[in-house]
Amino acid sequence: MKRAIGLFTVICCIVALLGCAAGTGTTGAGKAAAGTQPVQTAQTGQSAGDVPAAQAPRIVATTVSAVEIMNVLGLDLAGIPTSSKSLPERYAGVAKVGSPMSPDMEIIKSLKPDEVLSVTTLKYDLEPLFKGAGIQATFLDLTSLDKLKDSVSMLGGKYGRTEQANGLIARYDDTIADIKAKTAGKKSPKVLILLGVPGSYLVGTEYSYIGDLVRTAGGVNIVQGEKVEYLASNTEYLQQANPDVILRAAHGMPEEVVKMFDEEFKKNDIWKHFNAVKNGRVYDLPENLFGTTANLAADQALTELVPMLYPELRQ
Image: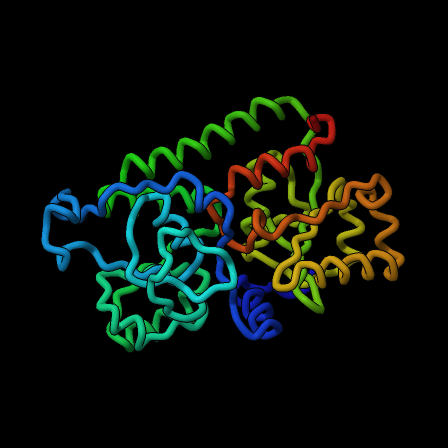
């Protein structure tokens, strides 16, 4: 394989091509079971209706995934990201603080937040900016389903929403248990993950979020022994690994990227020698379910992934 590519580099490619970042999450399950309970303070456990408004936590979420987590936990926000994605109606009218990759520090400071939420994949670039502006930021690790559950649990405990957090985590655990029962004893398929952005594509390792979903569903990533999320593509190496399944994730401009993939598979003769291509087991993953980082639709993504890996389980 060629040189390693970090997830931040991938996201930068998308932003450079689009001119702005839409967010790090999806719109799926984030709208689902949002509670409407009054906000509680982490220190006293009182509701916002029982204490002066100034004591209620002022939280700014700078990514879509963070917004959706707070929505399910039933927590109000003082600021949300500027995004082309649909955000929960709970936050209609809340101040916009700019794109996830370049939030407006002056706007955030003016909101006087107790805490600002971002994600670890943006920490390297954003942490110095937050510190320079005197802003306390928490970077949520959403690089895998387990890390997503850890982040939900942490925020639930911190802001008195343990019951809501445990309910969401149980939803994921139930889905995983059901998948393990269905796939028990079945041969694990070899899987190639391609992440496409307009003009190019990369290979996802088991350390990418989609790679984590594949592993959870019982698949085996053909790229082993790497510690990064993405690698530059080497089609000859990939063909030698001969995956049973090829998953194509289109990001940035999904329709344009799918066309790019179709052209690549048509013009580059090597692809016709892949078993996955011969057997018609090449799948384009919907962007709203299969992001570059975890989002609340993880259980739905797993459910849709299983029949791609195990055709015999299609209903």
